[in-house]
Image 1 (cartoon, rainbow, N blue to C red):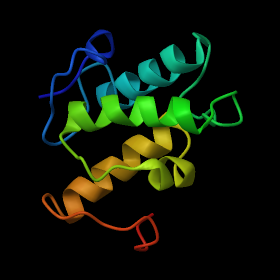
Image 2: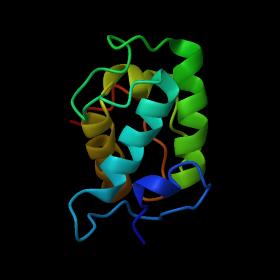
Image 3: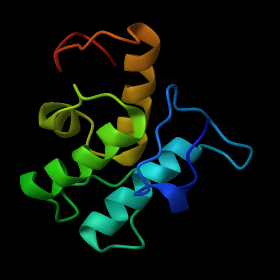
Image 4: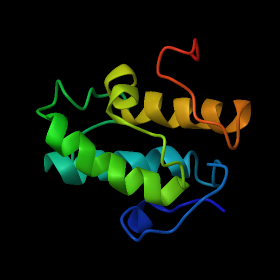
Amino acid sequence: MALRPDEAGAGRRVTAPADGPDGDSFEAALLTLWQQALNEPGLSADDDFFASGGDSLMAIRVLARVRRIVDRPELTLPYMLKYPSAAAFAQFVRTLTAAAPDVAREPDAGLP
């Protein structure tokens, strides 16, 4: 079940983030969260959250929403620091989900 960008804050969960018919809907949902948190509607999926004005408190708020969406409570701030763009974070979450659907990994576990 893919998440539409307009549902990004609705608390709907996806078990395996998937591409939708119009492209990468999970990445688009993350980008919507990044844009809302930063109040930057022109932010692109490749823009760095922190270089675009985000701070750790904003990131924690975004992560709380992302954890509810994907039901991955182990997603913490170090992951967002390591993967600070919506595109990179979406790919990381996909890799994490595929590598270990029910196992938390440390940020330095060698994942791309």
